Image 1 (cartoon, rainbow, N blue to C red):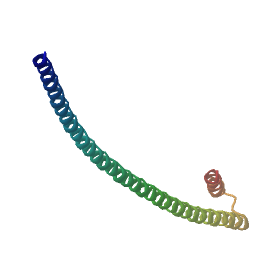
Image 2: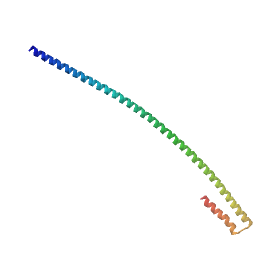
Image 3: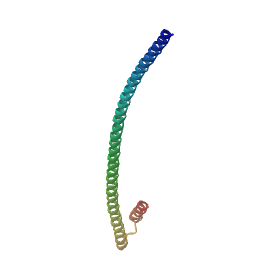
Image 4: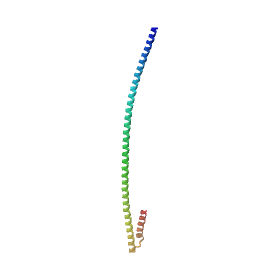
Length: 142
């Protein structure tokens, strides 16, 4: 029975040794897996940081582009406003010049009518010419 107790003890010791080796092997495998996972986590964090920095710099570039376009649009609007103002001013000057010409023609017509009336000329053709001019000027004023 002493020999069977030794065999049993030896079997238990062998079983305990095998269990210890199995657990040590399993522990080493878990440690390897943990190192691999930590390594992958660090790599993914670096990639995330790089992507975040890239997105931030692209966002800043887009903001700069939008600001540039806003400035260009404002400058274009100012240039158009200045050009329209110049055109309006030019048209006003042309209008004033045309009004002066019309007024001058009216005075000439009145002068011719007075001169024709003073000369006693009652010819219909000469009276009709100022009347035609008056009608043309009236139509131009409208």
